[in-house]
Image (tube, rainbow, N blue to C red; front, side, top):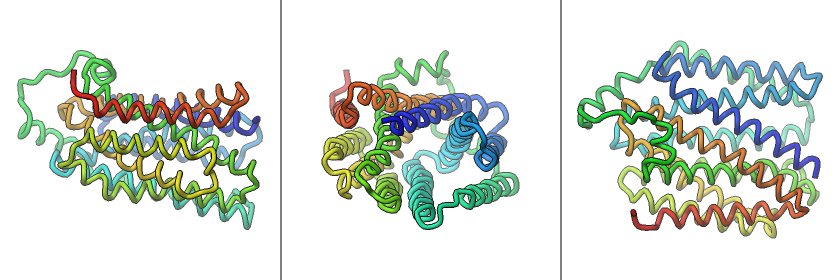
Length: 353
């Protein structure tokens, strides 16, 4: 139980720092621009391998986790808005599918490789050195090759939107609760990442308690991340012309089925596939839904608000898992979040009021 609580704390600190970074990135994008925002994010990431390689106190692990959340919040939010800037409305779903797919295929591949390496070698330092090399490469690309894409967004605003449209007085409030469509996507994002947070924190602990090897754990969690990643290559384009709310409902309901199955099928591939494919259906689609309902001028802050709530889902998921553990029924966390995921899916099928 102590291992589970430690994992939940790490998930919560990561989620909180990433959520705050997401919200702050909305202001960064409109002040220092897209290019320098992503450079800042990778500079923060460079702290992580140093902290872990020199770690001699628990606070350094927590600090590295916070730095990871800040870096991911800034870099990933920036790549999302940059792709949306460039492609315009017609191929928005395809761009989001490619962006999210690239990220989560990397997560799936890296988790499987790292777990396999640790199972056979056990020296974590080599993994950290490799991550440092990746960060350095990303910084070089950001500095030398990436353009600032705001001018594409301004062209879209002039060509496809009413120039007299006013910016909401409070974009955070407008996205969070005032606009019905934006609110629905924001709540869906929060619940989606809550179930992901529970999986991230409790799946390894659950599998270790069942005497699964690190390779098996890496394989099963890699199946989840890879199906999530590969699936978005197909689900992203669907949101270009498909019924966005139907896609969201299907994905959330599919995830809920996988979560209900998990306690009894933790060593089976099926729950991981259902949750992964269900997430693939909603992840790019939520982003497209937010983008379609926001003007290019204030879209960065709307997306930043959505991503704030989405990654606060990690905190919500961690608290749910902690509460279930405190009650003495850790598996209850999966049932609780499965029910919320199901209800979120159904909400996308309800008629507008």
